Length: 210
Image (cartoon, rainbow, N blue to C red; front, top):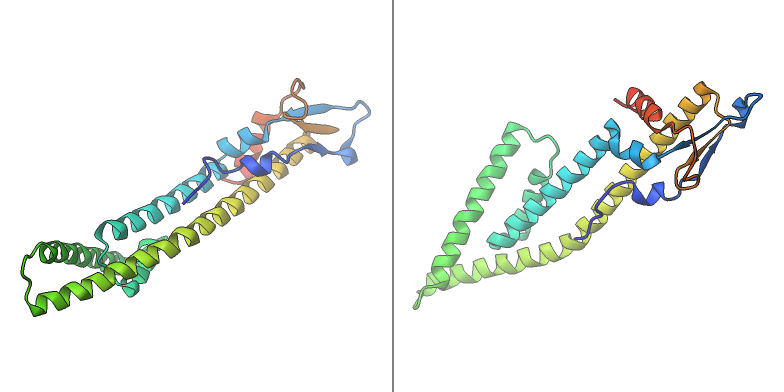
């Protein structure tokens, strides 16, 4: 499952300038801002990155657990997913998850023992068939999840980017208006521009989005 190395890159690449003609002073006043720095260093940006990384970590843990132990029914896979990815699990949910994980680990041990048996009896063969069906089911679930979780993480990244970038723009406009700027350019547009308002806009961003 592919995920991007950073949140914010794509949308910030579209940034241009902030026109504040309604607040022009007699003498035009121009500034520059690095939106990427504000997005990455802001409290909201850091919060969204933690949320993204936490979800990504949980998904990887879930898929690694099932992929390692394999002997998991389709119904158990869905229940594990529900419990594993719950944002704030209750004590009861935590206990359910621990019990399920223990059961799966024990079943994997049973599978490993049975497949090494040279002459399994009829009951053991039946059990092996049942466990093999679970293994096939979990393999199919993981195949589906690999695509599904990729889409899910892409959507989460996009929504996080959009929220942070929108708030960054609001902060820049608020600061520019308060300081009487005619226009503020993104640093990719005005590379050598003076009056860098990045740090001041970052303070506004954090004040408004603690």
